Image 1 (cartoon, rainbow, N blue to C red):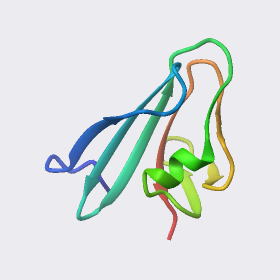
Image 2 (image 1 turned 180 degrees about the horizontal axis):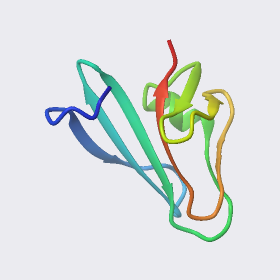
Image 3 (image 1 turned 90 degrees about the vertical axis):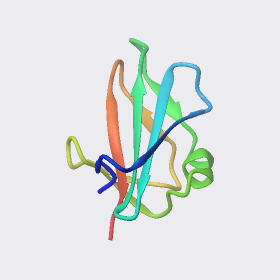
Image 4 (image 1 turned 60 degrees about the horizontal axis):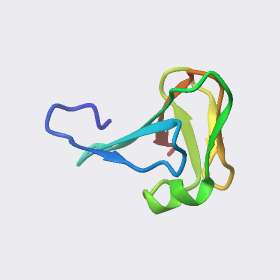
Length: 87
């Protein structure tokens, strides 16, 4: 997974002022961290996931919850997810 110390890390625009996005990439894969800094539900649009290279089934490494890149990611108040692509 992209938690290796040599993984490249970049802050990315989530297309939502309340959601902070970090992308980590290495030869071992990539991980997208999304963090909602608002007390209310927020969404990251599906097209943004695609722009960042995330396609198909996604898994939150914190909870095991499944997402799909064709659907906006909904985050509850102060919720965060660490998304990777499923095999």
